Picture 1 (cartoon, helix red, strand yellow):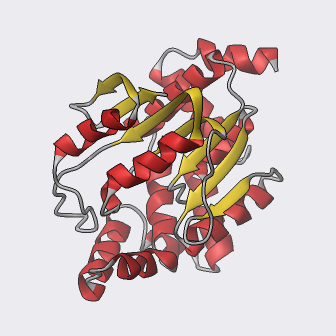
Picture 2 (picture 1 turned 180 degrees about the vertical axis):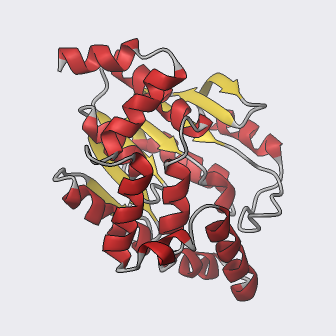
Length: 261
């Protein structure tokens, strides 16, 4: 464990940080992209061509068109939209395979901070396909994944079984994330999809242990490619500090924010 911790902490360059992300997710005999494509194909029972037809921008466009067609209005409508949306599996996988993507590097930097802090328990809120959870698990953390989507949670469970590792899975439609339970929490590309993100951050605050950290992305602006982004006011993120969080750092014009309880 000492050697693993030192490897995490000593990674300084983008290449070294990317290696931490990639090593946790890829098969030894494949690239990360090929690993994720194969996982998609095996789970969805799709051909490689079918997976790639929903990969990257193609997947983003299909998700957009499904949103426009269904036009969810109420909270229940929004939950139902995400609950069975398999399209996110290849779309998110293509994002997680992007070499040295800034979001992945920021998550690795958060992993480094949490490792230096001798933390053990990690929650990924809005965990999607479970990649961040797999990364934290790989480097020794106890992991929980929370989402409203059964499609995402089922795929994440399958991936964890494939990697032969364990985690807790929280269906937010039925379960709570609890109180004073986690050392560190992420909410990556999640809060902008929620009608009332301040209410969600209040729950996250309660779930975080005193002295713990939460790292969030806050793209609270209109995105033509992603009409399912519901919050269009960057000042929304300032409300989080009123919940009791201390803002430690923000970067990327406020897109990335690190808070401490």
